Length: 427
Image (cartoon, rainbow, N blue to C red; front, side, top):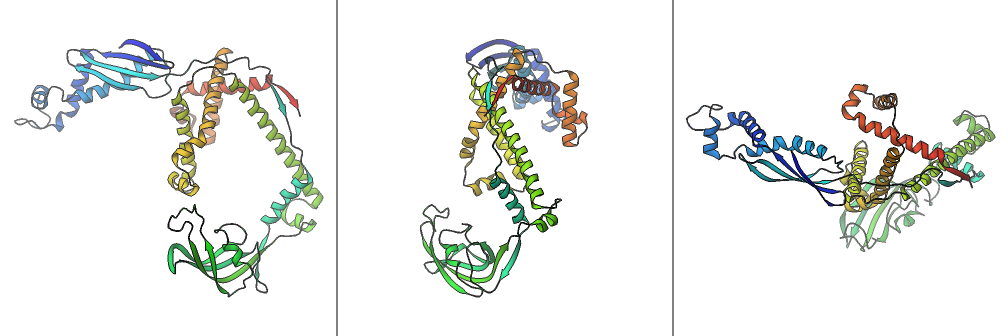
């Protein structure tokens, strides 16, 4: 039962909750019945010892912890509902008293959804700029097509050049001693790619197949392996193969062989069309982003820090989930990228703040404008989700509350309304 509700800070409340002695006694009795078979009392068969005997031997409070735990969730949830609070984080709960005479008393600290205000979001002015598609952009795109249809050609009549792929054996030595991770056989390296430390690839240029030679380089001062950072080393090299990439000529034959078009002109026209469509889509996305930035700018209210932290957590969880599909653990990803979890959180922070503020602003717009999606619209959204995840609709409803999805639909309707009312000028 909720005894008191006190606001101790902005968006922070303290609740005092009491469970009557009678309700607590029922919970203690349930805990006894659940656990009596696990407790040994001399003179009684397992599960047959009376509760009084168990409490005499192990203490009156032997079942209190489990009884309190069984009451906790439902009691706190009911009190929060009675206090009409919408929480944005799990509450902090402290048990302040437990006894047969007084029952149970809880002190609960709640962080609540902030009360916010927004200004008039209708008639927001933005500029739409569609980037023109140039001949260079068309040629660049077709260049990628040519590269995708390129072939690797072995070279045996000249030395290695910048841009070639070479196959080499190498072994690195520091002060005449091989170092860990400095050896490989039949390794393929593109010269000029910057894949190896500065100075390495340049010294392969000019050598021919079968050459064995030394490369002298110095590791960067900030190299991750501390024992090699700033150290001069020698790599012994054997060059096995030289290959270069042959890119096909752009002519009608190439177009016929690799596309559904007949001529270079037809291909260029199609590429231009798709680039223009992409430019239009990009401009539309920029317009929506600008409109939403204006919505965020009109938001007034003090937002709990925990909402930003929770959003960052969600973003990191999403990243970890996506990486797992590629067989990569988050820790491995951080190691590869040279990041820490703290620096990753910092990277996501600005985006998280925008997302939290935008959602609050749009939800307030929904409330201010009494946007109420029809049941059919909510059911249609359930059907879309079911189709996306190849699940029965009823199964989806076990994981997504109708009230939550209804608010999502309302928020999207708010976005559509604000966009439709915006004043868009072409640059």
